[in-house]
Amino acid sequence: ESNLREKIDCLIAKVESTEKMKQEMLAQQDEEHAKELSLQCFQYQKRLDDKQNDIDEVNVTVQKLVAKREWLSRQAKELKDQVLDIQHERMEETRRCKKLDEEIDRMKFRLEKKEEELTQTKAQMDGV
Image (cartoon, rainbow, N blue to C red; front, side, top):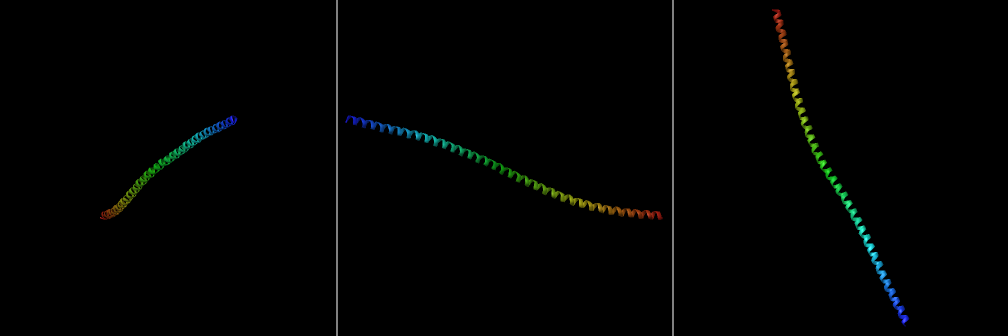
């Protein structure tokens, strides 16, 4: 009976030892799993941060492009206004040139009349 008792105590000790070893292995696995999850979480957060940085850079680029488009739009309007001003000035210059041409033609006509009168007057004086 004492031999049997020793065997039972030995088996109980082995079971307890095995259970303790199992608990330690589970704890170690849990720790390794937690470390792996922590690493994965860190990597995931890093990827998220990188993606957010990329998004922020794109947003800044978009804002710059929008500002440039607005500036170009203002420049285009200013240039269009300048073109309209130049066209108006050109029309005014054309009108003034036409008036001057008309005035020159009237003066030429008067000059021709005066020359004709002078020629007639000279002819009359020569005939006298």
